[in-house]
Length: 392
Image (tube, rainbow, N blue to C red):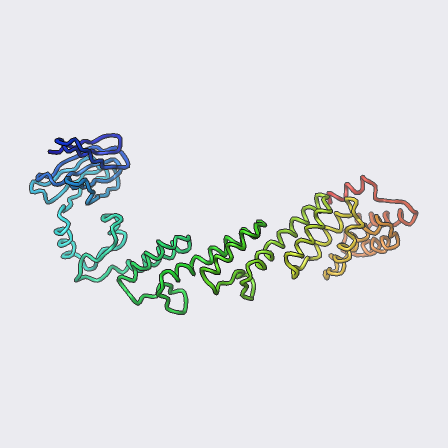
């Protein structure tokens, strides 16, 4: 009534001869051999994908899968049809009971506990886990395995899979705490999964905010709040923050400031000043440090915008608390003053640099030369000198 074929196209075919109806048995590599059971109810296939498969002939369904560590090149049924033998290049031959009930009975007789999750999945595939030996305890890895998988699914955002895994754990222990990392006992699968996914959305929102994608960041922050109404949107601060727009803006502000410094170094002073202002607008509490103001002051002056950046020079001098850093900011201000016509102020600033003991004598001598030129009504800041200062 049936014909079976093996092929290197990764399939075996079960053909009902009278009606010429084909059933395909799919493998991951070539099928080397097929064999019928003595009663004709089962078909076994041997494949180079390291498996042998047991097929029910009347409907073409796979009812068992035997896995080896290397290709399987032969299958054979016992004369009474109760056993299937497999031979593999992993140097093993295996004898497998075909009747599932008898296999279960024999397994339970020789076991002290039910199957582990890994063992179950190796032989039962995607069939939902269950206790097959009612008189034996549950394997100790079952519930922890379901909880671990549920947690991973939740963090990845696969909420439905997480909920399903939590529910599987609850089948075996109805009062189980689904999230033992919290102080309270949590038993609502969806609530737990949502709370675990919320920090992932916060991280995504943070990354978007730092890229300047404020609208997208705000959207993700709001999704995080929907998942967990108590979540802190900015865990890097002491206070719990839940204002999506405020958090997104604050995260982008330092990035905007960094862009402003880079623009200043490139000589794009107007854009740099604009970005300084945008950074302050994004976060009114943003503290722009001495170095940032000094960068704008110095490069703004070098690139011919001394008048525009004088305010930055004053900010840098005011904020500097380290003695040597303060002298450096005074020196930058001296350059801006010289280029805007405040000769006396420039002389005083350069003199402060020349008098400070912490700088190389060559640099101090250079300032003395600038002072002398200014006193003589000359401009020491030629294009060549300014070009040199750009590269310092």
